[in-house]
Amino acid sequence: MTVDAIRGSTSVVTRYVGLIAAIAVVQAVVRTFSRFVIFNIGRDIEYDLRNDLFRHLEAQPLAYALGLTAMLLKDARLTVAALAVYPAAFLTVKRTSRLLMERTFRVQEGLGDLGSRVQENLSGIHVVKAYASEEHEVESFARANARFQELNLRLARVRGFIGPVMNIVGGAGVLVVLWYGGEEAIAGRLSVGDLVAFIGYLGQLAWPTMALGWMLSIVQRGRAAMQRLNELFNVAPAITSPPDAVLPDDVRGEITLRGVTFRYPGRPQAPPVLDDVDLTIPAGSTIAVVGRTGAGKTTLVQLLPRLFDVDGGTVLLDGRDIRTLPLGWLRRQVGLVPQDPFLFSRSIRDNVAFALEADGNGRVEQAVRLASLTRDLAGFPHGLETIVGERGVTLSGGQKQRVALARVIAAAPRVLLLDDALSSVDAQTEREILDRLRDFFRTRTTILVSHRITTVKEAELIFVVDEGHIVEFGDHETLLARGGMYADLFRQQSLEVELEAI
Image (cartoon, rainbow, N blue to C red; front, side, top):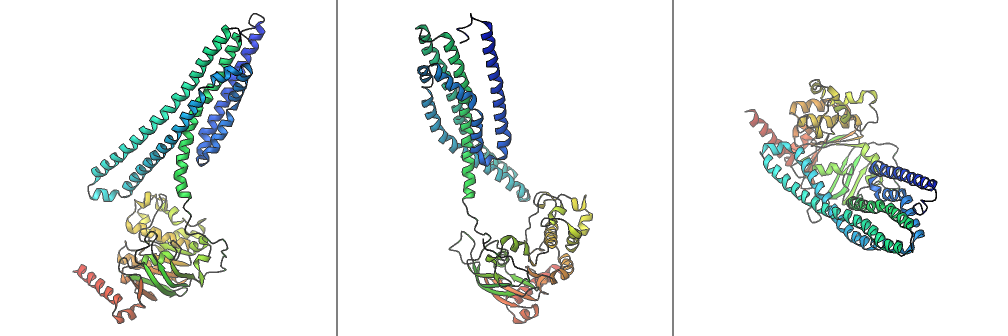
């Protein structure tokens, strides 16, 4: 060794110093590369954390493996003595890792709860301010934040325990080598050079040992995250496209419901929302569905694009069970505009063109005109490029509904479902929009769901739904003459209009 040969030649010292310097450079390069792999590539593929950690370990074997091999070659007994403290440390860390994973999981749950509270409050800020509940919500958030802080502190105590354990292991190894190796050197059974070299090799194991504790923390955080993700992955999609689905040659738009019964998931004991419903809607016709609140109108139209599947009976499109059709294709043919539409925090143009691969032939502008948005756009600072904010917060209720209507017009589905899609606009604007859409309706099957009789009275056929059953159907004049529920609704709404006019 260099220490033993120091009196022989300075070239020996130079050679070993150069070797040590080269090892230090290689070690720095390897460490830098490994950290680059973890902190950059690893963040892009966090779900595959175990593979990343394996690659990290593979990036560190040079110093670790060569150091251990050299130690064994120098003195096997001294090596065993130096590593004697490792099993106890690993056993302690193994037991700690379970607690680390559990507390990491709780921290992630707490963070998710905080995020949900913030999102919920921002989405419902109008309600919070309307009821002057700002202080109550702040206090509620503070309590949740305090719970999250406590969970983080409990996790920090466990994570803080692992690092010192690994440092103790490294320090204990050096102490054992100094004590046992010193006695061996004094007794003449081990040269001073070998003892110095042995301590140097043991130092090569110090960083990987400390990194092991650091990586253990990352692994447990990854396992906790994967546990939360697996809760989602393990829920099989209830509605899927059949593997043997055949794409139809064309779509006429005839809709048939045969003995349809439906309950919402999770309510097996509740009365069915729809109970043994039968109806036929001719292709290219415009029909309406009316009824009191909770009668099942919205549920009926949600079954057509398979947002839910029926519990009993069959829904047919052009004589084919919709469950046998490709799901993506079906939903492109059936366009739904709900009463409370969702808008993305993008421009009005982006929201209208959402289902379009490209805005060919000015379809966005045409859809905006048919939805009576042209005058509104003139008052916006950037016209079609105006950003609507989260869920369309910068728009009024009627404007949001008309943007959603323009979106489905631009998509041009063969079946159009308007579920109280104009409930937030005034009667005159609604009449204007429906008049503009007459030609659009003629080329497709249209279902209008509305609580306003004035909206549906010109439909070719009107279905009256009550408590999950179709209790009446016919055109406006026929249903009025029958004197049933439809006539009652018409008289009630006519009276309300007269009272408002007084």
